[in-house]
Length: 181
Image (cartoon, rainbow, N blue to C red):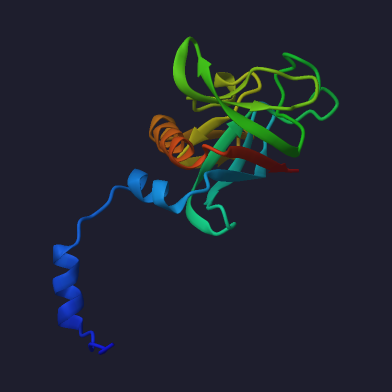
């Protein structure tokens, strides 16, 4: 078999002739479909808790195929009440499952399951501690106000759309969320 030397020009020509596959089609070839969301709590206020998150998608061999990051806002942390249903507190640190769900009758949302003593913990839109009664509110950026001791997230709709698309594209074989204290 005769080898052909590949040059920059030939790679450029090849790139022009190759079709570009969408991210969804690429992920169908890669396989896998597990996502791990790592949540690191950073700011604790009287009515809110703000965290950074990193969502990482893996293929069947455990290789990283994509990632995204953002912020979450939850109610204030009260570990004494974190296992009480409707306690309006952040959930206890640990590892949980995340499954597709509905919110106010609409599809396209996700729910955190396996939290001791708690149900109906959704990932949904919102910007302040008043917008959550135990759920996680995604945002593109977060702010901690040292005067009031409260946190807010911004860009919630944009981040919810990004997270929904990411989990829908890569989480078909399971999604877990690990929350650190």
